[in-house]
Length: 181
Image 1: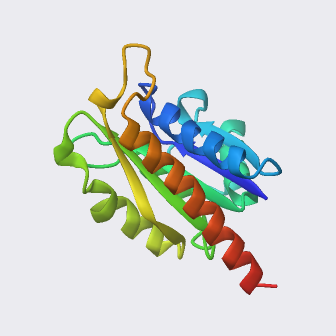
Image 2: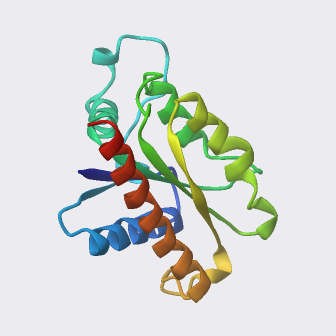
């Protein structure tokens, strides 16, 4: 089983750090789990312009293929201007509408203000619903003040929420897989 984490930020490390924390928590719970972080800072994903998928650059094809091959996901984004990043929305625009169908997805958001904590519910989860994903009930919002100067998460409540999300993702995936046999 493969869990792919997606960090939808082009600058800043906090979303990738937080998504990776979920990946590592899940791996600790299930050592047989294969985990991979797709950090959009490391890829040149082209803008969707309507051309055939084979005509996009190698990075774009690599990222989309990794997403398509995964069994479950954790998706993270910083909140800019009260919304998800354009890079993450562009990534979604590349996906076929069945890409996340019947797959379990967890959500992480980061922001400089607690006023952004509802963006996941109001913007990201509806997009995931469009893709017919099974969205974990738990989501994690991490305020910038939950990190220390070394970008480590130091807020124990957030650490617990990350662990709970990892447990929920694995539980849902196990139940879904058992029901689809």
